[in-house]
Image (tube, rainbow, N blue to C red):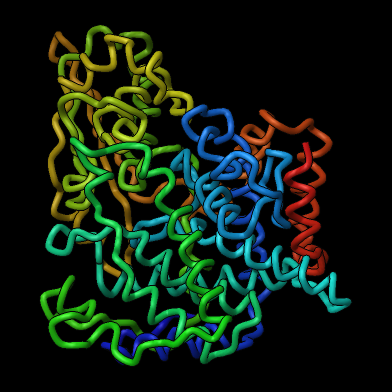
Length: 478
């Protein structure tokens, strides 16, 4: 169900709307729960594959040597950590490859899974020890629907990462994750509202680390950081720490005065499952606005038929968001810069007819053909693509690519308006999503273990009864 654009909350009433929605107990449609299970399986595959990147792996585990183990298992590691560090680790693993799900307004709602799984598993272990029923994956699915909706609707209404504001989009993760983590840990509506007030009062991450010259590894752990903070704030609220009545609207010192030049935070009323129902699965590991350009370039790889060394010019027509985020010339010193470069991902797809998450390492990036093609790439905005991208009735992510050879021969424009993982192409995406999971998880798990998890999460009704601590323990087991 889509929230009505005709009525919305603003200012501090936004906290009440989020708290009411989080504390509610709606009955979600089976298709919604099935999509949540697919998002969870996809996130597990991304997390397992991320462990092969040494820059990611060194961040995982106890923050300080000798720290005692906790009760939350971290996928693929054989480690059980306290819930705050586990939230960081799970969120970081899911997000690291920039391969997890996304939405029509950007961001990665699966970032919230660090907080959701850590909170639910900790609550399960605690309640099991007290002889009480433990949270199960059905509670995780419910929290996912709510967190996806809160993060996505806040992004849609406010665009905190616009240059005029400069905040990173993980502010939405922190807000959404704080709300649902408080719920999963046993908080009521009042506790959720108190925790949310502190989440808004926090210092917020700046978008600088996603852009040259600061693009770097924080892009991979920012979601995990938001999840860890969410657990921290939820824990304080559950200890009875006070909340604040006007964290957004307070004159001079409130969030709106400091970050939005007095503009109110807004949120559409009628929150439901729209964001999760319309989630976009990533089938190419690159920034969302470039995914359709990669698909077009893969098609042109076949047209080139080995003539890549004769390319004289590459033209890309794109949306204004891509121009702002990923039109990058000059040095690309690390994977965080490369997977957010339109020129880089198009060059890789033209050269190889594919794009993999291994294509951003230093050894691959040293191939001189990549920089040659980057220098020949001309990126320009297509106003029609920009309109479709921002129109809530369209929600396209269009790109078109054309290649010109050294003798003047030009390919046709290859246009792709919606990526393969878009809801409009869901039937096409499902087998590709299964293949993606098995490919990513194969680095850690044998075929039988992969098939078992995929099948068990595919039975959504049955999976809903799987205790969360047992689920995470099964993923952590080596």
